[in-house]
Image (cartoon, rainbow, N blue to C red; front, side):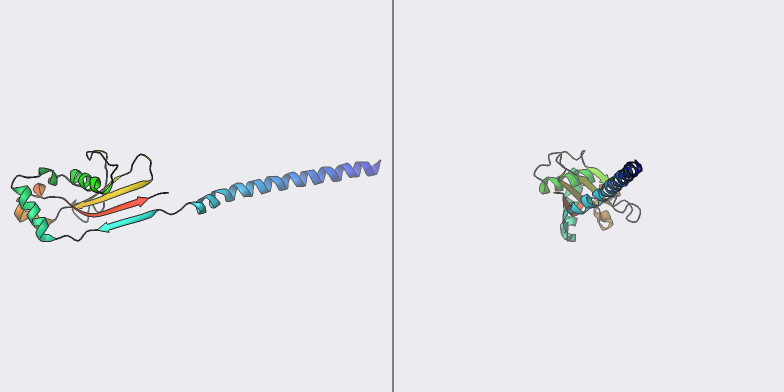
Length: 159
């Protein structure tokens, strides 16, 4: 009889140890699953394009706008939308669906703005940076009349 009681105690101890071991393994696995999932995420592809600004072309554009043509060039959001229409075939907005992000609002005196837009499927993010240049002020005669020019674009593709 004493041996049966001993066997029951041993069996209960083994079961308890096994249960604690299973709980430990599960807790460890749950801790490591997010790390494994994070490692499986593919980095995004990034395509950037910084434009070389042709000063004489921008001055000619400013003269054109100052003479009463293409007033939309004075609106940073509309200039960014126009550039986005060129980049993304699926973009059909009017500029109001662009989110403004300040690239360097204080250091640049508000002369640079970055807009971003993502299609509904969320597979890409488009960013367009537009700038207006102080050297256009003699032609524009007013800081609010200076044209905005796309200076860089960025496409981030998430797969």
